[in-house]
Image (cartoon, rainbow, N blue to C red):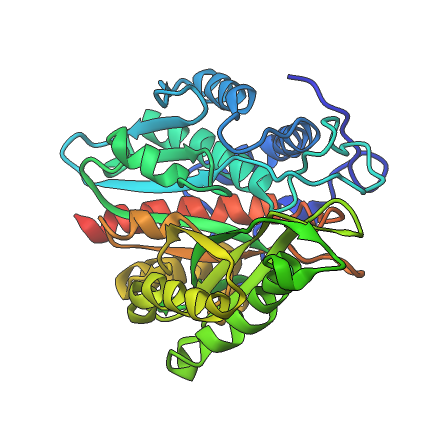
Length: 419
């Protein structure tokens, strides 16, 4: 694997990138030195993945790269059945517990607008959510923990999960679960990039940290006709307008205000000519909700409101409600592990409180089976347009060694706590 690599300070890594932060505890044995040696290669790997993104479900080259890197570290990765994801166990003490660490590896269908050497080389595909960073961090964790296992100082087994298809439905986490990815696992952890937090901070929260997220598609049909005589047909453009403007507000009135329900249509389509009333129209969007109980009721509520709104127009309604993912709800004991690990890795100032987000994350499906927690990794950069899912999204790469430190400490503390 080769990649253009441009580092700060004339190509040399600043010591602040690799030194343990003030107030932190060095990694055990010689792992601090090993991490410092590995950082340039990890950054190169991140930039290679960033410049060669793959869409959800098609992460074959990314998975192959991951498997090669893990094999070079002396590990034995296995591909998921479709070949677009990787599971790899780092075997320590055979009678010890199993702790899982997850990274998602897919990219988004966006055009990369950044003017950087590692800009995406794939037209219309971009790592605009930081999954390239998640993948790189987990590779770094694997390299360090493999060294610890070789020294006989890993108190159990650490399972690295490189998951495909986080950004689509059906969720890639379900593929991992079906491939026995959670067998024997007692706890599972993950990081997700957060551009609103600076490098060196980890956002933590007990309980819900993301919202539930479902997909809603409504298709309307009618006879079609001439715009001069809408009374002789069904005006689907009018019906579509009512759908888009009235349904979100009415749905929110059917649930408690503190449930945080948000229905937003991101796509709408009707017609091809200014003087023709179309026979087909459609709108699709997402329903997000913070409350688990309301999420359970949402499909029935949406179906009833859509039909009530469209009925007076005479249009025929076909509603597709695709269940996505429940909220990620962090286990309190897992957050205790992450808090201790973050303090050890980054110092006391590394721990930050974080609010519940309206974003969805399919890490939630793992937590339906085993306890665990998702944390937010500070990757903040100065300047505008730093939000996730933007074509201009980029990260401060000092977050990579910070993330490696946190996840290594997390794995070691989770194994110790589960003994």
